[in-house]
Structures are given as structure tokens and as C-alpha cells.
Figure (cartoon, rainbow, N blue to C red):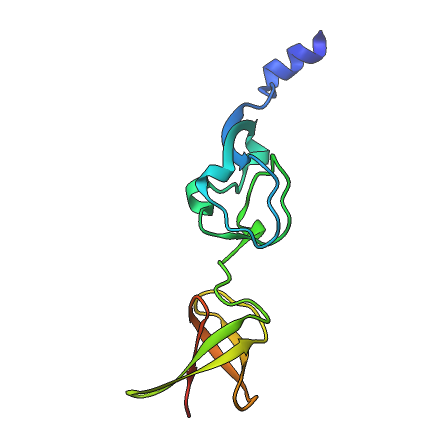
Length: 142
């Protein structure tokens, strides 16, 4: 009884829970998150620190497997992968107003604006380019 009185006098009562968005179901690595993937649950303020709102996490991809009930933080997510390793891509070689397109294959994955290495199907030449969109990589000609 004296412990409770001492805690009350020191203001160290039970921590107040805050509502936070958590995953409603398990999510595999690389899965794109949507607002419907989240539920709101009460968590301690310490556990909720750094948590993303469902709206902020929507459109991002899981960087690793996440279990149900997980409070999602920025480090759990990555930019959506518009180009994935081994998948076919359209390579756009750009030099001023001249644009040449060719088919190729991605040697790595990347999101919008990230650098990826690709190989052309016709010449088997390896190039570095920037992801422009879904399945499209832009290479600047020298």
C-alpha cells in the first residue's frame, strides 16, 4: 500500500495508452500496404513512439515480413519497387532530344529515382540507369 502511495505522490502512475495504427494481418516482404491493412489499437506512449499513421504507410512496401499487431515505423517500409531483379524492363537511352528504347532485364531492384543496373537483350551490354516508372529505366547517353 505504501508503494502505491509513493507512486501516486511521484506521479509515476500507470502509463496512459494512446490509439495507434497496427497491422491487422501478417504482411510478407515486398507487399504494398493499403489503409485497409491497418487497425487501431491502444498502446503505451513508449510503444507508439515513431509509429506511422495508416495514411502515411499506404503505398509503401514492407521491407521485411511483419506480423499482425505490429506497430509500423519508417524503418519497416521502403519505397515501392517499380523495377524488380530479373524482370523485363524498357530501357530508354536519352541524349538531348534523341530517345532510343530497347528491351532489357533488371539486374537489381529499385524504386522511383533509384539507380539500377540493367542488361540489354540485343547486345547484352550492362548499363546503369535511373528508375523512371513501372518497368522503365532511363539511361543518360554520354
